[in-house]
Length: 277
Image (cartoon, rainbow, N blue to C red; front, top):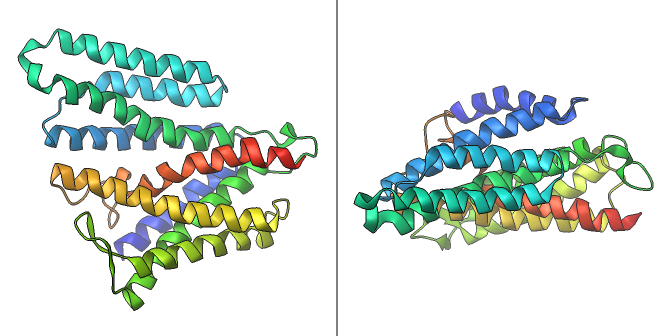
């Protein structure tokens, strides 16, 4: 019940930011989610005996998001270079933490890449203008993101119910004991179905084959992202990354599959969808 109530509150907010005439509501929502999730990641790192540079990580994350807003990839490169150097220099002046310096610096930089850079790909999609291509597509970014979230959510739903109904063979028992191969297949199928339904209901401009393949790929990659975050939690000996969202755990628990899937959507619309024109 808690999961349902959380979704009832969060989903309208998400859809408003996706379909608003201004993309900056979505940018702001993404920035908030990134800062919260990055904070949870650094908390996991501290439980694993790392000492990440949290302030530097937060500042860099915001710069990375800004680079996608202004479509300045060099800004991302510069931010990642800067966070690497600053984290290393900071470690130099903490000789008492010498034995933890390697993993602490690595955690600082990796947190920015894992959470901020991957999530910012959705910002990059939201900033796509309708007239970007030769044949303009009305509400292109809104349709793309709605399809994306529909795929992610239905993949999660398909995997859950298929796993409960027919799950027999464990997918990764040491990392996530509840997940099964049958559930993963159910999620994969539902991802493809969600992509196709998105085309039929609100996104006729995307080719049928593309909707099916994109849905299937996101259905696979998203589940891998879920397992990857479970791996990080197991390494830190915790069940959830936080308690922010009732029934869902922390922000990182909620967006783990989104993080891995976001680059798939970003590169599809910047490379393959553009080639249709």
